[in-house]
Image (cartoon, rainbow, N blue to C red; front, side, top):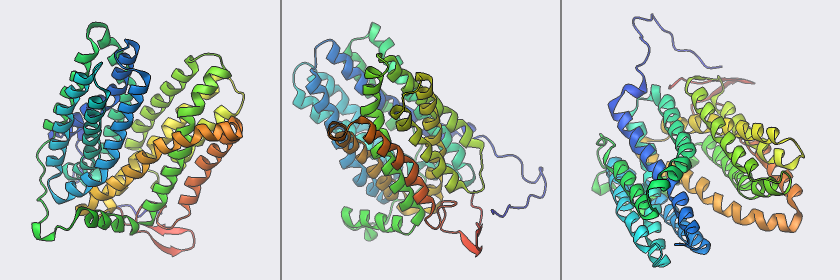
Length: 425
Protein backbone atom coordinates (compact mmCIF):
# COMPACT_ATOMS: atom_id res chain seq x y z
CA UNK A 1 0.00 0.00 0.00
CA UNK A 2 1.07 3.62 -0.45
CA UNK A 3 1.26 5.69 2.71
CA UNK A 4 -0.74 8.87 2.13
CA UNK A 5 0.68 12.25 3.00
CA UNK A 6 -1.48 13.90 5.69
CA UNK A 7 -3.25 17.08 4.65
CA UNK A 8 -4.07 19.63 7.32
CA UNK A 9 -6.73 21.54 5.41
CA UNK A 10 -7.74 22.71 1.99
CA UNK A 11 -6.68 26.22 2.89
CA UNK A 12 -3.20 25.10 3.87
CA UNK A 13 -2.86 22.95 0.75
CA UNK A 14 -4.79 24.57 -2.10
CA UNK A 15 -5.20 22.61 -5.34
CA UNK A 16 -2.06 22.82 -7.48
CA UNK A 17 -2.12 25.40 -10.23
CA UNK A 18 -2.81 23.96 -13.67
CA UNK A 19 0.36 23.16 -15.56
CA UNK A 20 -1.08 24.88 -18.63
CA UNK A 21 -0.98 28.18 -16.75
CA UNK A 22 2.78 27.99 -16.26
CA UNK A 23 4.48 30.14 -18.89
CA UNK A 24 7.73 28.15 -18.98
CA UNK A 25 5.93 24.87 -19.49
CA UNK A 26 3.58 26.30 -22.13
CA UNK A 27 6.60 27.49 -24.12
CA UNK A 28 8.18 24.05 -23.78
CA UNK A 29 4.89 22.40 -24.78
CA UNK A 30 4.57 24.59 -27.88
CA UNK A 31 8.17 23.89 -28.87
CA UNK A 32 7.68 20.16 -28.47
CA UNK A 33 4.46 20.31 -30.48
CA UNK A 34 6.16 22.24 -33.29
CA UNK A 35 8.94 19.64 -33.49
CA UNK A 36 6.31 16.88 -33.54
CA UNK A 37 4.42 18.53 -36.39
CA UNK A 38 7.61 18.90 -38.41
CA UNK A 39 8.57 15.28 -37.72
CA UNK A 40 5.22 13.79 -38.71
CA UNK A 41 4.63 16.08 -41.70
CA UNK A 42 7.88 15.32 -43.53
CA UNK A 43 7.04 11.73 -44.65
CA UNK A 44 3.62 12.84 -45.94
CA UNK A 45 5.11 15.76 -47.86
CA UNK A 46 7.69 13.47 -49.43
CA UNK A 47 4.86 11.06 -50.24
CA UNK A 48 3.17 13.86 -52.14
CA UNK A 49 6.44 14.34 -54.02
CA UNK A 50 6.23 10.70 -55.08
CA UNK A 51 2.71 11.27 -56.36
CA UNK A 52 3.77 14.23 -58.50
CA UNK A 53 6.79 12.22 -59.72
CA UNK A 54 9.44 14.61 -58.42
CA UNK A 55 10.70 11.76 -56.21
CA UNK A 56 10.71 8.02 -56.81
CA UNK A 57 9.47 5.47 -54.30
CA UNK A 58 13.03 4.16 -53.93
CA UNK A 59 14.27 7.69 -53.34
CA UNK A 60 11.63 8.18 -50.66
CA UNK A 61 12.83 5.05 -48.86
CA UNK A 62 16.45 6.21 -49.00
CA UNK A 63 15.66 9.69 -47.67
CA UNK A 64 13.54 8.39 -44.78
CA UNK A 65 16.16 5.76 -43.95
CA UNK A 66 18.80 8.50 -43.82
CA UNK A 67 16.62 10.47 -41.42
CA UNK A 68 16.28 7.42 -39.16
CA UNK A 69 20.05 6.84 -39.18
CA UNK A 70 20.63 10.49 -38.24
CA UNK A 71 18.16 10.13 -35.38
CA UNK A 72 19.76 7.00 -33.95
CA UNK A 73 23.29 8.41 -34.19
CA UNK A 74 22.34 11.69 -32.51
CA UNK A 75 20.28 10.32 -29.60
CA UNK A 76 23.13 8.97 -27.42
CA UNK A 77 25.44 11.89 -28.24
CA UNK A 78 22.71 14.40 -27.41
CA UNK A 79 21.99 12.62 -24.14
CA UNK A 80 25.56 13.22 -23.02
CA UNK A 81 25.65 16.81 -24.28
CA UNK A 82 22.32 17.65 -22.63
CA UNK A 83 23.72 16.46 -19.28
CA UNK A 84 27.08 18.13 -19.84
CA UNK A 85 25.80 21.51 -21.02
CA UNK A 86 22.48 23.36 -20.93
CA UNK A 87 19.50 21.24 -22.05
CA UNK A 88 18.02 24.43 -23.54
CA UNK A 89 21.16 24.96 -25.62
CA UNK A 90 20.95 21.43 -27.01
CA UNK A 91 17.33 22.04 -28.08
CA UNK A 92 18.36 25.35 -29.64
CA UNK A 93 21.24 24.00 -31.74
CA UNK A 94 19.41 20.78 -32.67
CA UNK A 95 16.34 22.72 -33.81
CA UNK A 96 18.46 25.21 -35.75
CA UNK A 97 20.33 22.38 -37.49
CA UNK A 98 17.04 20.77 -38.55
CA UNK A 99 15.62 24.15 -39.62
CA UNK A 100 18.65 24.94 -41.80
CA UNK A 101 18.85 21.44 -43.31
CA UNK A 102 15.18 21.24 -44.30
CA UNK A 103 15.42 23.71 -47.24
CA UNK A 104 18.25 21.55 -48.61
CA UNK A 105 15.79 18.65 -48.83
CA UNK A 106 13.57 20.93 -50.91
CA UNK A 107 16.56 22.04 -52.99
CA UNK A 108 17.46 18.43 -53.83
CA UNK A 109 13.89 17.50 -54.76
CA UNK A 110 13.89 16.35 -58.36
CA UNK A 111 17.64 16.99 -58.60
CA UNK A 112 19.69 14.93 -56.16
CA UNK A 113 18.59 12.13 -53.84
CA UNK A 114 22.09 12.25 -52.32
CA UNK A 115 21.61 15.88 -51.25
CA UNK A 116 18.15 15.10 -49.91
CA UNK A 117 19.47 12.13 -47.94
CA UNK A 118 22.34 14.10 -46.40
CA UNK A 119 19.96 16.90 -45.40
CA UNK A 120 17.42 14.39 -44.05
CA UNK A 121 20.15 12.81 -41.90
CA UNK A 122 20.81 16.23 -40.35
CA UNK A 123 17.08 16.75 -39.77
CA UNK A 124 16.89 13.30 -38.15
CA UNK A 125 19.88 14.18 -35.98
CA UNK A 126 18.12 17.34 -34.86
CA UNK A 127 15.02 15.33 -34.02
CA UNK A 128 17.05 12.75 -32.13
CA UNK A 129 18.98 15.40 -30.20
CA UNK A 130 15.78 17.13 -29.11
CA UNK A 131 14.13 14.05 -27.61
CA UNK A 132 16.32 13.44 -24.52
CA UNK A 133 16.87 17.19 -24.08
CA UNK A 134 13.11 17.85 -24.04
CA UNK A 135 12.62 14.99 -21.59
CA UNK A 136 15.25 16.35 -19.19
CA UNK A 137 14.09 19.94 -19.69
CA UNK A 138 10.59 18.95 -18.57
CA UNK A 139 12.02 17.83 -15.23
CA UNK A 140 13.72 21.24 -14.89
CA UNK A 141 10.68 23.33 -15.77
CA UNK A 142 8.03 21.36 -13.85
CA UNK A 143 8.04 20.55 -10.14
CA UNK A 144 7.83 16.89 -9.13
CA UNK A 145 4.20 17.05 -8.04
CA UNK A 146 2.95 18.08 -11.49
CA UNK A 147 5.22 16.13 -13.82
CA UNK A 148 2.61 13.45 -14.44
CA UNK A 149 0.19 16.15 -15.60
CA UNK A 150 2.94 17.75 -17.70
CA UNK A 151 3.90 14.46 -19.36
CA UNK A 152 0.26 13.76 -20.10
CA UNK A 153 -0.06 17.19 -21.75
CA UNK A 154 3.06 16.53 -23.83
CA UNK A 155 1.96 13.10 -24.97
CA UNK A 156 -1.51 14.51 -25.72
CA UNK A 157 0.17 17.00 -28.06
CA UNK A 158 2.04 14.14 -29.75
CA UNK A 159 -1.19 12.24 -30.39
CA UNK A 160 -3.04 15.30 -31.65
CA UNK A 161 -0.09 15.94 -33.95
CA UNK A 162 -0.27 12.37 -35.25
CA UNK A 163 -3.95 12.86 -36.01
CA UNK A 164 -3.72 16.37 -37.44
CA UNK A 165 -0.42 16.38 -39.38
CA UNK A 166 -1.53 14.16 -42.33
CA UNK A 167 -4.82 16.03 -42.78
CA UNK A 168 -3.20 19.44 -42.38
CA UNK A 169 -0.52 18.50 -44.90
CA UNK A 170 -3.09 17.28 -47.42
CA UNK A 171 -5.14 20.47 -47.05
CA UNK A 172 -2.06 22.69 -47.35
CA UNK A 173 -1.05 20.80 -50.50
CA UNK A 174 -4.18 22.08 -52.22
CA UNK A 175 -2.79 25.62 -52.28
CA UNK A 176 0.97 25.11 -51.75
CA UNK A 177 3.52 23.15 -53.73
CA UNK A 178 5.78 20.48 -52.23
CA UNK A 179 8.80 22.80 -52.05
CA UNK A 180 6.89 25.34 -49.96
CA UNK A 181 5.54 22.65 -47.65
CA UNK A 182 9.06 21.37 -47.00
CA UNK A 183 10.30 24.85 -46.18
CA UNK A 184 7.30 25.17 -43.84
CA UNK A 185 8.53 22.22 -41.76
CA UNK A 186 11.84 24.07 -41.46
CA UNK A 187 9.96 27.01 -39.95
CA UNK A 188 8.38 24.62 -37.45
CA UNK A 189 11.86 23.46 -36.44
CA UNK A 190 12.86 27.09 -36.00
CA UNK A 191 9.92 27.58 -33.62
CA UNK A 192 10.94 24.45 -31.72
CA UNK A 193 14.49 25.80 -31.40
CA UNK A 194 13.63 29.29 -30.21
CA UNK A 195 10.49 28.90 -28.12
CA UNK A 196 11.47 26.94 -24.95
CA UNK A 197 12.63 29.06 -22.02
CA UNK A 198 16.23 29.31 -20.88
CA UNK A 199 17.47 26.40 -18.77
CA UNK A 200 18.01 27.10 -15.07
CA UNK A 201 20.53 24.29 -14.68
CA UNK A 202 24.23 25.09 -14.57
CA UNK A 203 26.49 23.17 -16.99
CA UNK A 204 28.72 20.47 -15.55
CA UNK A 205 32.20 21.72 -14.53
CA UNK A 206 34.78 21.26 -17.27
CA UNK A 207 37.03 19.33 -14.89
CA UNK A 208 34.32 16.65 -14.46
CA UNK A 209 33.93 15.94 -18.17
CA UNK A 210 35.18 12.69 -19.70
CA UNK A 211 34.86 11.32 -23.21
CA UNK A 212 31.40 11.02 -24.75
CA UNK A 213 31.60 7.22 -24.59
CA UNK A 214 32.54 7.19 -20.90
CA UNK A 215 29.83 9.67 -20.03
CA UNK A 216 27.22 7.64 -21.91
CA UNK A 217 28.48 4.56 -20.05
CA UNK A 218 27.81 6.43 -16.82
CA UNK A 219 24.22 6.84 -17.93
CA UNK A 220 23.99 3.11 -18.68
CA UNK A 221 25.30 2.35 -15.18
CA UNK A 222 22.69 4.68 -13.71
CA UNK A 223 19.99 2.82 -15.66
CA UNK A 224 21.26 -0.49 -14.27
CA UNK A 225 20.73 0.84 -10.74
CA UNK A 226 16.98 0.76 -11.40
CA UNK A 227 15.71 -2.80 -12.00
CA UNK A 228 12.25 -1.49 -12.86
CA UNK A 229 13.74 0.63 -15.65
CA UNK A 230 15.61 -2.23 -17.28
CA UNK A 231 12.59 -4.54 -17.00
CA UNK A 232 10.19 -1.93 -18.36
CA UNK A 233 12.54 -1.04 -21.20
CA UNK A 234 12.89 -4.70 -22.13
CA UNK A 235 9.10 -5.11 -22.14
CA UNK A 236 8.67 -1.96 -24.23
CA UNK A 237 11.31 -3.16 -26.68
CA UNK A 238 9.56 -6.53 -27.03
CA UNK A 239 6.20 -4.87 -27.69
CA UNK A 240 7.68 -2.49 -30.24
CA UNK A 241 9.62 -5.26 -31.98
CA UNK A 242 6.52 -7.44 -32.34
CA UNK A 243 3.34 -5.39 -31.90
CA UNK A 244 4.40 -2.26 -33.75
CA UNK A 245 5.87 -4.40 -36.50
CA UNK A 246 2.59 -6.29 -36.83
CA UNK A 247 0.84 -2.96 -37.29
CA UNK A 248 3.34 -1.85 -39.93
CA UNK A 249 3.40 -5.07 -41.96
CA UNK A 250 0.39 -7.26 -41.12
CA UNK A 251 -2.32 -4.61 -40.84
CA UNK A 252 -2.02 -3.47 -44.49
CA UNK A 253 -2.03 -7.11 -45.65
CA UNK A 254 -5.08 -8.02 -43.57
CA UNK A 255 -6.89 -4.85 -44.63
CA UNK A 256 -6.34 -5.70 -48.29
CA UNK A 257 -6.71 -9.50 -48.31
CA UNK A 258 -9.35 -10.15 -45.64
CA UNK A 259 -11.52 -7.05 -45.87
CA UNK A 260 -10.79 -5.99 -49.45
CA UNK A 261 -10.34 -2.31 -48.64
CA UNK A 262 -7.62 0.00 -47.39
CA UNK A 263 -10.27 1.80 -45.33
CA UNK A 264 -9.76 -0.74 -42.53
CA UNK A 265 -6.08 0.23 -42.36
CA UNK A 266 -6.87 3.94 -42.10
CA UNK A 267 -9.70 3.44 -39.61
CA UNK A 268 -7.61 1.17 -37.36
CA UNK A 269 -4.75 3.69 -37.20
CA UNK A 270 -7.22 6.47 -36.47
CA UNK A 271 -8.81 4.37 -33.72
CA UNK A 272 -5.34 3.80 -32.23
CA UNK A 273 -4.67 7.55 -32.11
CA UNK A 274 -8.09 8.29 -30.59
CA UNK A 275 -7.51 5.60 -27.98
CA UNK A 276 -4.15 7.15 -27.17
CA UNK A 277 -5.78 10.56 -26.78
CA UNK A 278 -8.27 9.07 -24.33
CA UNK A 279 -5.42 7.37 -22.47
CA UNK A 280 -3.47 10.62 -22.13
CA UNK A 281 -6.54 12.37 -20.67
CA UNK A 282 -7.25 9.49 -18.28
CA UNK A 283 -3.71 9.05 -16.99
CA UNK A 284 -3.34 12.78 -16.23
CA UNK A 285 -5.78 12.31 -13.33
CA UNK A 286 -5.71 8.61 -12.49
CA UNK A 287 -3.45 7.60 -9.59
CA UNK A 288 -3.47 3.81 -9.19
CA UNK A 289 -1.91 2.40 -6.04
CA UNK A 290 0.55 0.21 -7.94
CA UNK A 291 1.53 2.69 -10.63
CA UNK A 292 4.17 0.49 -12.22
CA UNK A 293 1.96 -2.57 -12.46
CA UNK A 294 -0.89 -0.47 -13.87
CA UNK A 295 1.48 0.97 -16.49
CA UNK A 296 2.75 -2.48 -17.48
CA UNK A 297 -0.84 -3.75 -17.69
CA UNK A 298 -1.53 -0.87 -20.09
CA UNK A 299 1.48 -1.86 -22.18
CA UNK A 300 0.19 -5.45 -22.35
CA UNK A 301 -3.05 -4.17 -23.92
CA UNK A 302 -1.13 -3.72 -27.16
CA UNK A 303 -1.41 -7.48 -27.58
CA UNK A 304 -5.02 -7.03 -28.66
CA UNK A 305 -3.82 -5.38 -31.89
CA UNK A 306 -2.06 -8.44 -33.41
CA UNK A 307 -4.70 -10.70 -31.82
CA UNK A 308 -7.46 -8.90 -33.74
CA UNK A 309 -5.55 -9.42 -36.99
CA UNK A 310 -5.12 -13.11 -36.22
CA UNK A 311 -8.83 -13.85 -35.83
CA UNK A 312 -11.53 -13.55 -38.57
CA UNK A 313 -13.50 -10.84 -36.80
CA UNK A 314 -15.69 -7.97 -37.92
CA UNK A 315 -13.74 -4.79 -38.80
CA UNK A 316 -15.32 -3.08 -35.79
CA UNK A 317 -13.46 -5.54 -33.54
CA UNK A 318 -10.17 -4.54 -35.20
CA UNK A 319 -10.95 -0.87 -34.60
CA UNK A 320 -11.81 -1.58 -30.96
CA UNK A 321 -8.61 -3.57 -30.48
CA UNK A 322 -6.49 -0.74 -31.86
CA UNK A 323 -8.31 1.81 -29.70
CA UNK A 324 -7.55 -0.34 -26.65
CA UNK A 325 -3.91 -0.63 -27.74
CA UNK A 326 -3.65 3.15 -28.07
CA UNK A 327 -5.26 3.64 -24.67
CA UNK A 328 -2.86 1.18 -23.10
CA UNK A 329 0.31 2.66 -24.59
CA UNK A 330 -0.43 6.02 -22.95
CA UNK A 331 -1.30 4.34 -19.66
CA UNK A 332 2.31 3.13 -19.85
CA UNK A 333 4.08 6.14 -21.37
CA UNK A 334 3.09 8.85 -18.90
CA UNK A 335 3.94 6.96 -15.66
CA UNK A 336 7.11 5.68 -17.37
CA UNK A 337 8.38 9.16 -18.26
CA UNK A 338 7.33 10.54 -14.88
CA UNK A 339 9.10 7.77 -12.96
CA UNK A 340 12.27 8.25 -15.01
CA UNK A 341 12.28 11.97 -14.21
CA UNK A 342 11.66 11.22 -10.53
CA UNK A 343 13.99 8.30 -9.90
CA UNK A 344 17.02 8.95 -12.10
CA UNK A 345 19.78 11.19 -10.78
CA UNK A 346 19.07 14.62 -12.33
CA UNK A 347 22.56 15.11 -13.77
CA UNK A 348 22.21 11.80 -15.67
CA UNK A 349 18.58 12.14 -16.76
CA UNK A 350 19.21 13.03 -20.42
CA UNK A 351 21.61 10.11 -20.84
CA UNK A 352 19.18 7.60 -19.36
CA UNK A 353 16.37 9.07 -21.49
CA UNK A 354 18.56 8.77 -24.58
CA UNK A 355 19.07 5.08 -23.80
CA UNK A 356 15.29 4.70 -23.62
CA UNK A 357 14.74 6.39 -27.00
CA UNK A 358 17.68 4.58 -28.59
CA UNK A 359 16.31 1.14 -27.70
CA UNK A 360 12.64 1.86 -28.38
CA UNK A 361 13.05 3.81 -31.63
CA UNK A 362 15.99 1.72 -32.81
CA UNK A 363 14.11 -1.56 -32.62
CA UNK A 364 11.14 -0.30 -34.64
CA UNK A 365 12.86 -0.46 -38.07
CA UNK A 366 14.61 -3.71 -37.09
CA UNK A 367 11.26 -5.29 -36.27
CA UNK A 368 9.76 -4.12 -39.55
CA UNK A 369 12.68 -5.60 -41.46
CA UNK A 370 12.37 -8.90 -39.56
CA UNK A 371 8.61 -9.40 -39.70
CA UNK A 372 8.15 -9.44 -43.48
CA UNK A 373 10.60 -12.35 -44.04
CA UNK A 374 9.09 -14.15 -41.05
CA UNK A 375 5.62 -13.91 -42.62
CA UNK A 376 7.00 -15.29 -45.90
CA UNK A 377 8.72 -18.17 -44.08
CA UNK A 378 6.09 -19.19 -41.51
CA UNK A 379 2.84 -17.59 -42.64
CA UNK A 380 0.90 -14.64 -41.32
CA UNK A 381 -1.16 -16.35 -38.62
CA UNK A 382 1.71 -18.06 -36.73
CA UNK A 383 3.71 -14.82 -36.75
CA UNK A 384 0.75 -12.83 -35.45
CA UNK A 385 0.15 -15.43 -32.73
CA UNK A 386 3.76 -15.07 -31.56
CA UNK A 387 3.48 -11.27 -31.66
CA UNK A 388 0.33 -11.32 -29.53
CA UNK A 389 1.90 -13.75 -27.05
CA UNK A 390 5.01 -11.59 -26.67
CA UNK A 391 2.96 -8.41 -26.22
CA UNK A 392 0.91 -10.02 -23.44
CA UNK A 393 3.73 -11.87 -21.67
CA UNK A 394 6.64 -9.40 -21.75
CA UNK A 395 4.96 -6.81 -19.47
CA UNK A 396 3.87 -9.61 -17.13
CA UNK A 397 7.48 -10.77 -16.86
CA UNK A 398 8.59 -7.18 -16.20
CA UNK A 399 6.02 -6.88 -13.41
CA UNK A 400 7.74 -9.76 -11.57
CA UNK A 401 10.96 -7.77 -11.24
CA UNK A 402 11.48 -6.16 -7.82
CA UNK A 403 10.74 -2.39 -7.71
CA UNK A 404 8.43 -2.63 -10.75
CA UNK A 405 5.29 -2.28 -8.61
CA UNK A 406 5.65 1.50 -8.42
CA UNK A 407 8.60 2.10 -10.76
CA UNK A 408 10.68 3.08 -7.73
CA UNK A 409 13.80 1.83 -5.97
CA UNK A 410 12.40 3.27 -2.74
CA UNK A 411 10.00 0.34 -2.37
CA UNK A 412 10.69 -1.79 0.69
CA UNK A 413 9.01 -4.97 1.74
CA UNK A 414 7.62 -5.16 5.26
CA UNK A 415 5.70 -8.39 4.93
CA UNK A 416 4.85 -10.80 2.12
CA UNK A 417 2.66 -9.09 -0.45
CA UNK A 418 2.83 -5.65 1.18
CA UNK A 419 5.02 -2.84 -0.12
CA UNK A 420 5.48 0.54 1.47
CA UNK A 421 6.53 3.41 -0.75
CA UNK A 422 7.60 6.86 0.26
CA UNK A 423 5.45 9.16 -1.88
CA UNK A 424 7.40 11.47 -4.16
CA UNK A 425 4.59 12.87 -6.29
